[in-house]
Image 1 (cartoon, rainbow, N blue to C red):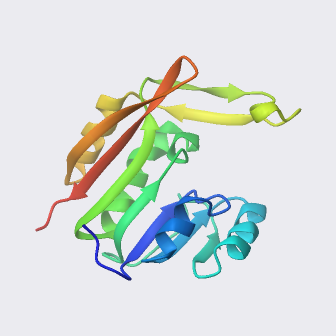
Image 2 (cartoon, one colour; image 1 turned 180 degrees about the vertical axis):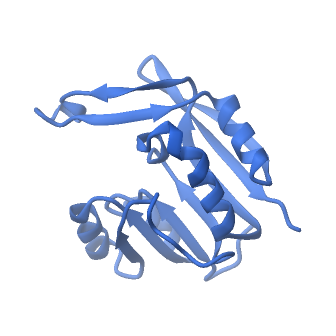
Length: 168
């Protein structure tokens, strides 16, 4: 699919493990995360990647800069009203024929989870819609949905989507 050394964006990269580390073996990886602590960890754990501490909604890249964009379990923490604009930005950042792989919601829900991951006082915000709506947003942004997969998790789950930006 992708040729060696192509630029790939990892939105919500966290500490870079495992995704950015794996991608950096064969691609030029740029990782974005809102957490300065996670970015510092990523720089140490994946020294051959490029990592920026930024809000994925505020960051800017040149048009057609990346051959692929991945975002696992990150978009679902962006307010739902902002997510269509994020997909539009990703469309601009991708080359024609570029790939997008994202984990999004499978059902609609917005709320918070207290003591997230068992950490007292840690509150995590979630905001996602259903899989059909995500697919429609991608199609509206000139993506062809290659496939979707349901990823089960604790009585619910997420949707993994592979899409390709249409070549003009």
